[in-house]
Image (cartoon, rainbow, N blue to C red; front, side, top):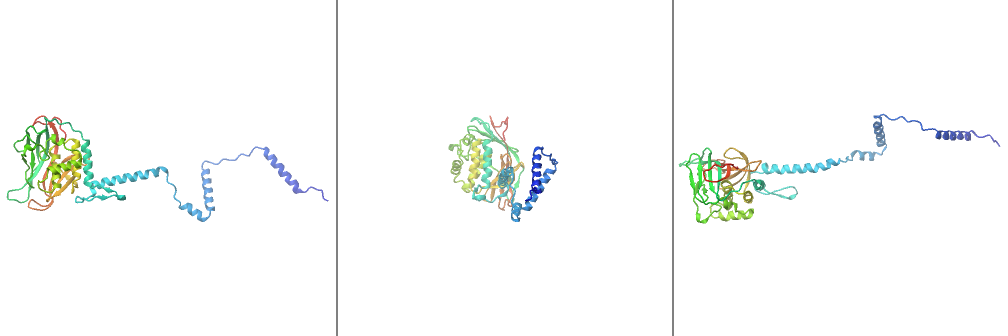
Length: 368
């Protein structure tokens, strides 16, 4: 038997001893990577790992959308809402034709109010928030305006528009004292103790003050400030009252109501809540539309609500920014002896409304 140790056994013993000695020594230093080597090495490892995956898995990773940051997901709905609001504003003032009165249906099937109703609602809100000093019963409501009316010769033919002139009126707040009407180029006209009614007999006619039955007291056709201040602020109740008091005055009931409200807005100085109710009542009258651009007697441009009846359109003009009532305009919508369609037969611009102590006195602090 050979008893000489085998070299293999002796070799394993040397490896064991070398490992034992290595355990006794400190680990050798490992050179650190430079600041730009780490990212490059990581990118290379990820690229190799991707190439080592099966083809199907690689394609899925390549087409899977990366998740959006949380801030983007929050912002997207906000931007969408802002765009939607801007779209509604644009439609309110520019998109709907003047002759369109049907109710639009917004996305999702929700009915959207007609353009005229939306505009008048904004006007009502502005009126309700306006500041107005109290008017005492012993004072006068002072209204200063610029007016122009088309005139027609006795022989007929097309009407001609006279230049706008200043018009001032002092109306007794409670109707107990005589008022005053002053127009440039004309003598002063005393007004009876009841508030006057101005009648326009037709296109091109000059408005004339008429004396209603004083025994009946103030009314929609014969208003005083005290009476107007007592009107209901509920739009439905107010419109019903206006329809009842203007019944039997010709034209159609809707146009009578629209004209009566316009007269109250132009010739009186209603408290803010009543003014707001008048605008909301007008929004309930069928056939009221929006005119995207209209100018008053002084050339101030704005947006208007209008109603057409019997070949003539009555427009109420409002400031585009403040929604303040600027004035009125009457335009022919049908050609005739007075002129072609589009002929302006009357225009006004409200300049000042205030409360004064006596007829003929200028307001100390005017309020437009």
